[in-house]
Length: 503
Image (cartoon, rainbow, N blue to C red):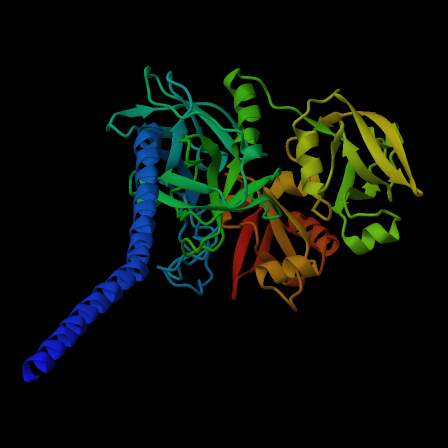
């Protein structure tokens, strides 16, 4: 009996051991079912990142040989005046200007004693980027880098150096074409920038701070950005790919290795903060085609001042949506007036294409030659109407609404605008009085003296100016005197600039 009991106990113990082992195996199997997918998912994610990195590396490796380093040289006259600089010798208040940070200036030194001190000439150098667009040596870059340069040197990725010829430059679009005497060169293909999508990956290649062939990656943050007074025609691609001083003129490329834009500017003067701008390559294609052939760039002019619509304004004009641009002014004798356009008209279509923004309309008009006939669909008094206009010729330098007259631009080399609430907020001049500098001609009297876009002019010869009318009258009086002492504000600092008129 004892043996039978022992036998039964042994059998039960065996079953218990087998059951325990089975449960442990089952638990382990179930654990693997839950854990392995997590590990597999991590491995897949890492593999995807590695693959993306390899894609970036492949695109950069193929594109980099076509990116060139540019050194532009020009001689400037440094004039010192007898007032004390609030910055001392080391701080340069103009170093973060979009167009002039390449050509460094020193602030007037307190050691200089007299405004009659003779000018001292100095060769200044801009270091930037460009890229090949043909095997026979044509290069695209920015006008603000080389337009005023006396000598342009180009260095290829393989170390070869050339003196470039300026085939042509276009200040209005900030595009320049260079040519070097070489063949069988690596070059980049140009994409269709209109097909570029927000969120798409892009790479910026250039020479920031002189560091050759630096590659940064990011996405397209926005399209159609404007209103920065960097060029007459602005339709910038915004990207968060790191762009720093020296990247200007370099290519912004897509993952196919094709150029979608020309890196041009950054927001903020102290370095990259994730907001960079590039000229769409489609705009550059048009300009390049003309400059390469040595043709003068002539742009059409309609003669209107357009404004963007919002939902409230559209409702006030009886429109169902806020598409179209509202005309606040039609210039007398212009192509627009001859075609029958009036202020308060809303342009809905231009040459068969819908119009959604004022900047878009300006750019599309500028892409057409003078004499081109265009069909314009407008909204007037609750009805659609189609008109035909023949575009006039646009002058290369044309003042914006509220600018000083053309004579002041010719004499001083810069133009100003009334300080609106929007401009005051943009530049940080809320509660201030004065006029804002809207543009400066490279190499002009104002440019050499340190005037830069975005500065606030508060006084002329100790007379406060509140608007462009005050400024024009003050400048007229100053011209008779021969000199104009401007009280200028940049960011939170105020300083003086002396301009001497030609006799």
